Image 1 (cartoon, helix red, strand yellow):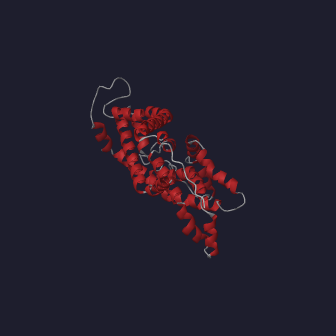
Image 2 (tube, rainbow, N blue to C red):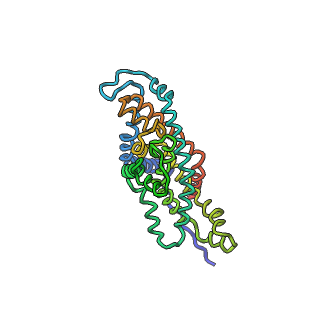
Image 3 (cartoon, helix red, strand yellow):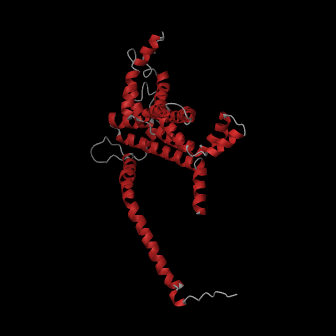
Length: 326
């Protein structure tokens, strides 16, 4: 039996430790240069349109400023004290938090039910998906104006339809009655944004393996048991991502409220965004408005970080594990 002998490699052709270090350093510098080259445009845009405005808002919040002239009247943190002690702003924070919770409690089960229904093979499924998603692609201004006209007291379509069945609408209209303004706003927001939830849930349903549902069917599980035990748990990452987007959008809500109610009646629908815009554009209190915007930014950032830390962590940790295995 013959044996193959492997000729020894010439040691002179192998890079020694000292020779390998410059090669490794050049490779690291090249990689760093490539990363800087590709990320520099995005970093410049991020700095100009995100970091600089935030820094300017913080600067304005430290002055009593009417929107013109130099910044000379330095007041320190007095604008923040005025904002946080303002009952209207505290009410606006409560309204934003109410919208966050109500949006999740209403749109999550509604969007999930519609997505599960539209994921089945039914006639006209494509048309139904389009109809559900159309409100989301409408501009907020258009949707707000349409609903504002529909809800006009006395002559709006909604009150006309109520009149045909013998019901009378509220005397000041749905948007003009303080007790009904927020629930009416939630109806409009649900109509406007449930399409996004349905779209994301349908995309998540495409990732549920058919083998799991088929195995559950063979074991005798009903349709509802399959959804509750198999489908919905596998949709967890999608649901958590949608909830995060819904939370941030609810905290920054402005345009629909501004068009429908302007924050009224009697500040019943004022949000943090409408408060700061009202202070800046109508009362010329740009220092107060800037302080309110900084408070809004801090609240949104804090909630986003906490959500990322305690809710989305399980999803990102799974990706990190896979990346480490590779």
